[in-house]
Image 1 (cartoon, helix red, strand yellow):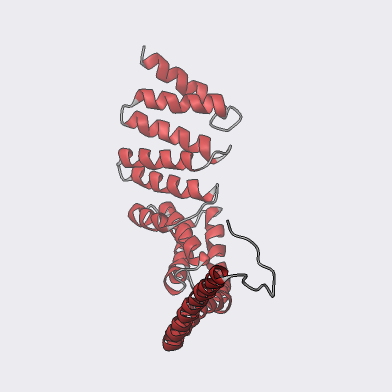
Image 2 (cartoon, rainbow, N blue to C red):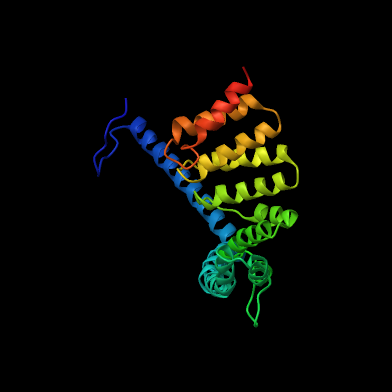
Length: 255
């Protein structure tokens, strides 16, 4: 059993003296080993310090570079792109409420009087939020101009988590496929559109269109399911106020 030895303790006999010497020797070996390990570590650090500090420096440079890019390049570029897109967006908004739609949509797409259109924004400001949104506007402009292939191409490039624009973009792609005589592709995108967000505007709108596309494909059970969802979940929507007519016709045709 080990005993605590007070400071100044002197061995009483040769046995205790020998134990004390062995203890001191063991302690010396332990500290010697630690000193040796520390020395090797110091030597390794000294030998490789340029690589160590170089690696740390590289990480710091990357982090600072990213922050600097966001603050001094990406942010100003986004602001500039948004300002440039204002002119095109004005033409787009005018086209929505105009009888001269095609010419105004063309101006929105291509620009005029030295101002950029949506296509210029997409090309010159890649990676910005404004360029992403320009894909949506360009796609919708082409859809209204009955250029369905281009509408699909640009709307598919648009990315968003927005509860309204996301479903509208997918629904726009579906509308284009319907016009191209591809109801199966259209149905898939209508289903994506109403699944993307639950709200009183886009969900019943695309449930209804999905039902119409399903009827086109002679999938009456699926069409009835979508129409009943509108009746049960969105009775106050514009589609919900007339959906009983469609459900009645569909049920009578399947009897």
